[in-house]
Length: 214
Image 1 (tube, rainbow, N blue to C red):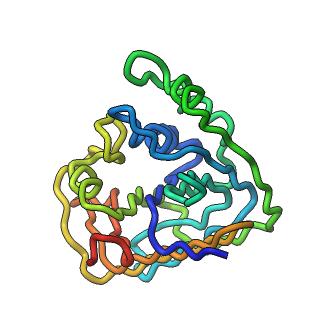
Image 2: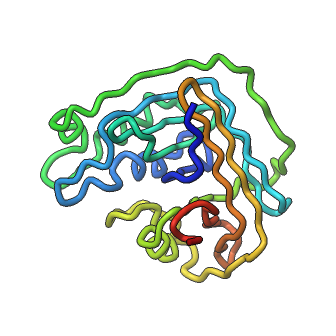
Image 3: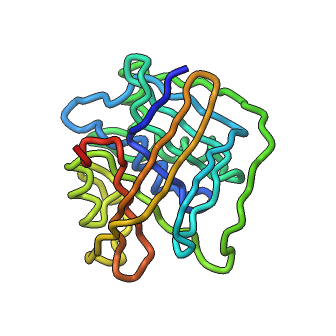
């Protein structure tokens, strides 16, 4: 089983977070590029998210989508238990893209999907349910970081993002780990520092094993 240490990682902040889905499904398609050639929906899994700072509120996730290029995982979206995944994907594929809708590009490039049900019992953790979950944008590459610090969710030029604050400060000691085991891969994505906006609603943790730390 392959162990993935760094990847384009997306975290759904709240149920049916359409901007998260829209960005994940469109990012990278500009200039006739195809960032992935298939994707797999993982239902009833457990993505365990460990954080060493109680002020950072991130719940475990219980569904996921993995995007592949030539059978290699290139993008991972971790999703809340009660999100309507089918509806969110439908909305994503109906978004306008260039002179058509995104679905047409998926059909043109034969980007197909599959579903795996892990049938795992959900593992929850104690978090502060009185406040909103932190909007987390894990980062693994320089160009994406530049765009994220301007509020964008995507490396491509899109309107999806968190634009509540355009000022960020660096947190040198923040540990966040994502752990997910599915039928074919194991993901262990660690972060040891991050940027946070001044109003504490948006967090950009830096992946420890990515080019950003080399």
